Image (cartoon, rainbow, N blue to C red; front, side):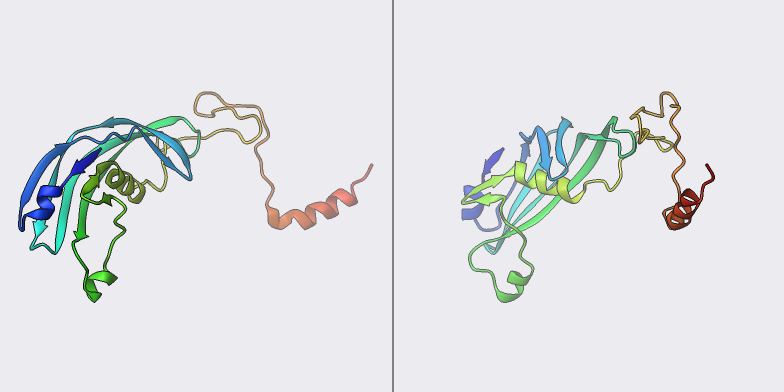
Length: 175
């Protein structure tokens, strides 16, 4: 969703609060595509601060379907997003230039709310997603989901530090 903020840019110290809803339905990243299952409208606070910068603030929650890291079952993960950005107006000074953020969410006088939401999801992405704390995962050999039923595969993994000794035993095995 694009929001026109021409009136905020043109009037010094103007404050506007606007209810917006993101059009983002899928979150795409290098990890894959994840569907956004739930999103709610939220209030976006926009403020022109002395014609030097525009303050952009808002909070919302989105629910994304992410596969479990162990068994690959889809898990609905709620992510709380807090938007707090400052968009510089005019030529930024040297110290403001050092603190400058990526401003790809602004095009002329249009604010791209979907880009803001995307950036916040990217920053707040969970490190590990589990369907439940004691998830057993899937069998490496047959692919059975061990949360539902056990499999008969031999799951003992030899210690790689002992591989050289195992080779010696295999060479001198009696026939």
